[in-house]
Length: 199
Image (cartoon, rainbow, N blue to C red):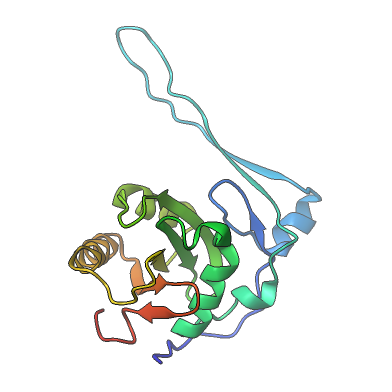
């Protein structure tokens, strides 16, 4: 089992999630005395013909009482990563259809955010890499990991799985975000691209 070395030890983040499931440090919340923090990104694009303005993008953070801080800090090997993915996964669909999730990390390998990227069918799924990478940029991630499930119970990656992983690595290299691992989940086991030498 490959172990990634954390750059430094730090206090675990307070876990808060929103539509993109990002987390904020407790200091920010306590300092402002808010239970809900809204970050507003104003997109000021003007069309010359109709003078329209693009819609405002609003990102909302709120507390998720179901998640434990201890499970989301220093995720430095595939076993811990599998544990994190299973905590955020919709377990009722693990044997029903394929889904694709991403977890984002800071330089200490603490989780700073996660997101479900897509849902698919019984044996296939379409991934928009732009959506994946934009999520990492929004939470200032330096590293990330992805996972998808095989409802059939097969652990070995397909040729399409390997090709997708290569594309994600290339996208991460452009944005200076390192792909730590690609995990394949089944009901009772997992496959790590990193541990098996596929990354």
